[in-house]
Image (cartoon, rainbow, N blue to C red):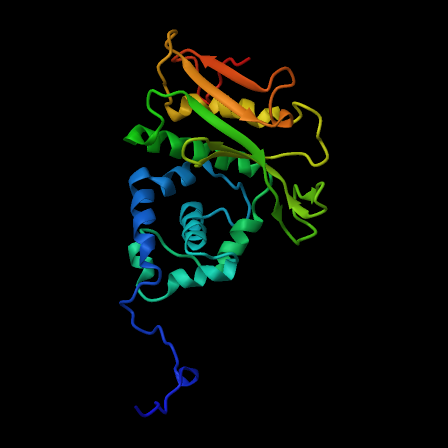
Amino acid sequence: MQPSSHTLDRLGVGFDDPHLVANAGLLLPATLAQHLGLREVVEEHLDLGDAPGRANVGHKAMSLIHSMLAGGDSIEDTNLLRAGATQGVLGHAVLAPSTLGTFLRSFTVGHVRQLDAVGREMLRRAWDGDRGPGDRALTIDMDSTICEVFGLLKQGVGFGYTKVRGYHPLLATRADTGEVLHSRLRRIGLHRPGSHWVPGRDLFQGASCWGHRPADPAGGLRLLLQGGAQHLPPDRGAVLGHCAPGQGGPKGDCDHP
């Protein structure tokens, strides 16, 4: 058999058909986001005030979310969503990287709490669709992580025991599925027991918003938090909270130990 005179080094790859879709697998999460109304919820809860990136926050957020799902790790990677007919299957406008950069620079640490509200509402809608724990007690694992950053002017960054500059959020995940339920930035350098209990308290307060109502003799809400001593209340290694139905206010507030 005669060897081919053509080598892979001489081949070029082009993406010039306007009907092609980059990362067609995005159609599934895009469909889910549309059914849950994610873009509309972002527009309802996220208010950047007079910041330059305040317009069309829903389309901008969805552009970033889909870019990350496709493997993007920088603003420039969002250009992938503008290739071919990809934008047509996402259900939202895909903004230019420069526009998304202005959007992200408009955020402060305080705006993260607005995104917390978006996350709570998305969990509530998803779990209302029979994706929650049902009648079982909900067990939540709490642990910290490190997200390295390199910018010197970023808000909320610091050096932890690993000597890595970055964000050091506390993550709360559902023990049986691994899905992330909540995250909260924490102060760097606090390691005494209970010093990070506030995120756990927020979890309990937000649980009524998720619509979680496991079977309980008192007809209430049961949550079991488990994690290291620094992540839980100072007086116990785990907490069993209780909130009667209807006690949760507009922000999910209710009593807890």
